[in-house]
Picture (tube, rainbow, N blue to C red):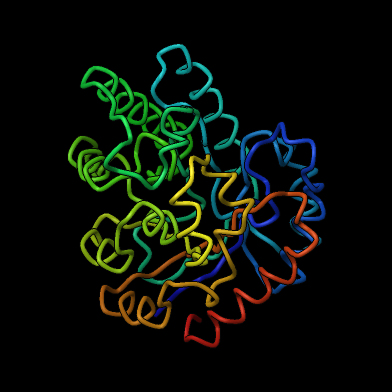
Length: 308
């Protein structure tokens, strides 16, 4: 198995760049390196500056590489397309001017990636995890979203050589089994790959191992999370937004939750997955004082479970 494990700013509660409680990006890089990581995601657009010299110097100081940038935004609204394409160019321009992360033998596509996630719809946010009651997009809106993702992927590839990966996300319009299967049918693998997230799959009622195995041929990148079963069962009974559930602690360090990571390790060996896995543990940034402890524990657990 040729696996490289990275971290992400959401482990420090960095999801909304407008949240006034976010820790400084310099601290996130410092603690990621202190925990033993060599790779980290860029985080949400606007968190880490777009200044290649400033960021490059900080990464060099901590011996880190950026493994992916992220578009976490409304992929549906026609009025948002210009912003989505601007984000694509800004992110890809930065990550391709920074030193490239090491590549694993057998990786489908070279990192860094552009991770694309739909977000920003209250009517779905409060139904995260509840497929039976979450509204679906109309065919017209769905096709517009598909067109937007294809345009993002085309710009990233043609202008920067960056591989786009689609990330199903709890609380967005690409979350549940029917939506994931439809997006895979509508967007050819030649244009964009798949980033499956074990925690989001479980949160949304799917078996992570089954989905990783079933879609191995489309899988370019993986996110690992773990779920605190007791908290999960509580929030599933409440009318609660996804990140409010995260603030309650529904995401926990890897190995302390309900997902069987030794079995996932064997599965990834079976399907021949090579490349990057990024650990995430979304939380309230006001609880970032425990982030270093948790990201260290997650990495150590995976190393002990055979992820090398």
